[in-house]
Amino acid sequence: MTHEGLDSLDKETLIRLILTQAETIAALTRQCETLLARVAELEAKLGLPPKTPDNSSTPPSKGQKPSATAKAKSDGRRKSHAGAHRPLHPNPTSSRDIAARACQHCGADVSQRPQLACETYDHIEIPLIKPEVTRVTLYGGVCPCCAKKFKAPPPADMPKGSPFGENLRALVIYLRFTQGIAFERLATLLSDILGLEISEGALVNMLDASRDAFAAQRSAIRARLLSGTALQSDETGLRVGKSNWWLWVFHHGDSAVFVAEPSRAKKVVEDFLGDFRPDYWVSDRYGGQLGWAIGTIVNFVFGLGNMGKKEMSHGPTQGTPDPRCYPRPAVRRR
Image 1 (cartoon, rainbow, N blue to C red):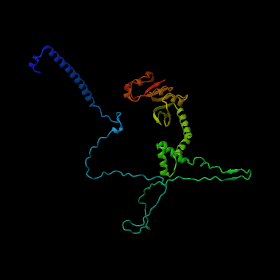
Image 2 (cartoon, rainbow, N blue to C red; image 1 turned 60 degrees about the horizontal axis):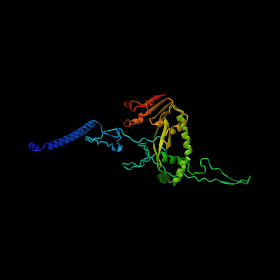
Image 3 (cartoon, rainbow, N blue to C red; image 1 turned 45 degrees about the vertical axis):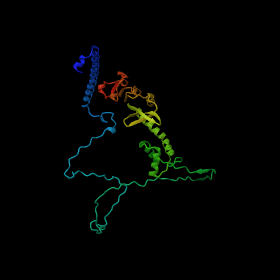
Image 4 (tube, one colour; image 1 turned 180 degrees about the vertical axis):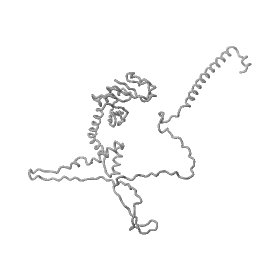
């Protein structure tokens, strides 16, 4: 608006114009302050390292490696280095000594000439895999003394009942639990590789029959853990069917017991320990993991970024360290 235009306005119009301009100036000032703060925030991030799966919660699939720099072209000569080959097997199953019959150069007969070993190598192959089926027939008859029927007892290594032997059962358990092969695929694998037709129900029966053996080993491992002075424990989520369970682990050294329970309560620890209390207890700061040692308690706090009232609510009596000391463990002696 020009000077002449302002002179033509009355007092009320000029006041409204000034108030409107003042509101516009205030709004623009607030917008400038917001933008300046955003610019300062972005400039501060310029000095930070890029987010990678190693220093942030970025998934591994996002951690792309940069393209390798192009190497300078060589002069065509290959750099010499020590040769590498598969070492010969220390205990071969068999051996074959092959003598030359004819010279590969001129074709002359050399079968009667003295020869020395020139080269040795291994040829590795697996034999034809097929199940070994033993038909057991128990004979019997009529006793001439008591006139009652008798029958030969079954051999100790091939008892009656399930037709599947120990080695086959061990293979099924290994493939199912160590390699995580589902029942349908496991039945197909045994059919394709071993030529053994076996139903999924038979596989389930094999695993169910091994329950007592595993329970005995579990009891032995638990007894070994409870005979020591230190225990470490943790728990994590576990999906069982369509329900959410918890997988607990109690371990020390080379011994570990896994306990799957639908509960995350302290009762799981109480049932495992019984009346035993270790001198040292190592765990995170979850409430169900606290208060189980008679000596030193070591509580690790994981995730500094998530630290807040949940971790600090247990109070200083639980050995909560200064946040600047994380991820060092919190140690409390009784």
